[in-house]
Image 1 (spheres, helix red, strand yellow):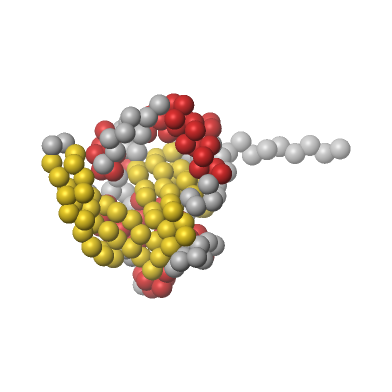
Image 2 (tube, rainbow, N blue to C red):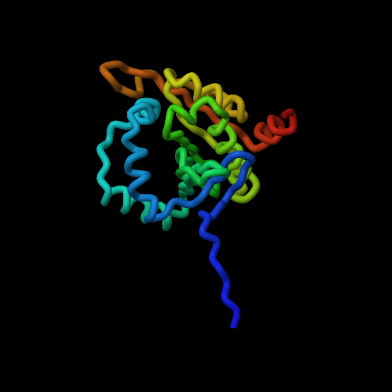
Length: 191
């Protein structure tokens, strides 16, 4: 009888050059909980909700059985450190579209190209495996760094929702952006 050794490293669902995307599990509850209270991330995503550990536990469990969403953690290749999360939401296989969201946890990881790399991995999966045609997202107008990252990957501005977010005593606009499969492919070919 032979014995096999399990690889102690986390499962790497989608791999890039500097990072990989992996499924979230119950072992990630504490880290995910703390990530959701990062002040800058909350501002950039317009998050006001208060979370509990039990609520996070249920959320992770619900995502694991929800066929209309894919929730993945973003981790660095060399250290396995989780630096954020990325998700496809409201996957509509009939109309072949979905929403995307992404959050990078720490200021030290912003502006290094991790967001675009994670988005490219998930978009490749979206178009190549899930057979989607269109992926959209919403970004607040004050998040210029994110807007540039989305455009870098191939997202195009579609419109503006005026005064959609009230945060820190001010109203903010949201910009709706999307990328179609052929636009993403063309953008990647020109890189």
